[in-house]
Every structure is written in structure tokens, then in C-alpha cells.
Amino acid sequence: MIKKLFSQLAASIQTPDSPEANADQHDAALRMATAVLLIDVARADNEFDETEFEHLLELIESHFELTPEQSAELLNSASDKAEDLVSLHEFTRILNQHLDDKEKTRIVSFLWQIAYADGRLDKFEDALVLKIADLLYVNRTRVMRLKHDAQQQLD
Image (cartoon, one colour):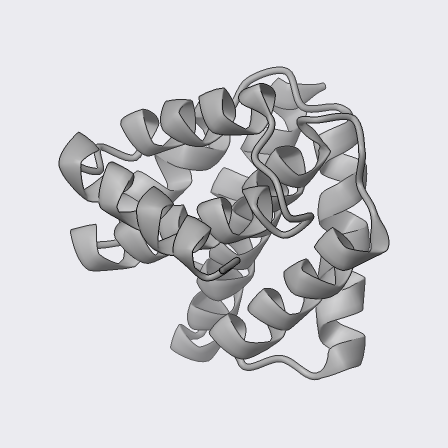
């Protein structure tokens, strides 16, 4: 199942007939990979509440410059994919191939924000964000700074 999903995501990044279509498919694959990781962190503590969903929706909307309807549609699709998630590697590999260090660091920042969205950090959320950050090759010192920043936003 995951292999099929990865193949579909990888195929969406490959070169189609027009440059515009290529850019759209590329962006869609990056949005989906990011959204799946965000949802996975939100669900890590087995409590995906309305606060986390609203925060996720706002992050997706502002970061990808989508309408509320497009953001909700992306989250619904990503949620379906996250249900079947077995490995993070397929999604982090897409991000590693197409994002620079600054963009990957920003995604890790979003992950921490989602982990803290319900007002507390669960040990499973913490471990998952650290694992994703490692898979994205984000410097551990920077990751801990982002964690601290997300925690400070609660105060």
C-alpha cells in the first residue's frame, strides 16, 4: 500500500508535458508530504482534537497560500494517507529531494507547533518530531531551538 502511494507521489513529481503542469504536480506532492507528516504528529498522542485541527488548517492555509476549502481538501486527503502510514521515509525523501535546509527547518517548526497545539507535549509527539527532523537532516541544535520556540508560544 505504501509502495503504491510512494509510486503515485513520485510519479506526480516526474516531468509531464508542460512546465506548468510539472510545477503544479511538484507543489501538490510537496503539500501532500508535508500535510501527512503534520497529521501524523497531531495523531501521535491518540488525541486529534479540534484545536489541533484548526491549527493544522491555519498552517496549511498560510504556508501553501490555499483557500480554506483547498486546505480542508488537502487535510482530508492527507488524513486518509496518514491512516495507512507505515513508514515516514517515503514522505521525508520527497521533501529532502525538493526542499532546501531553510524550508525543511520551517516544516520542523510547524511540526512542533502542531505537537504543542493542544497545550502540552506528549512523549509520542516529541519522539515523532525528533525522528522526522532527523530524517529531514535538520541540525539537532536547531530542532531543539524550534521546540523551545513552540513551547514559548504557549506562555
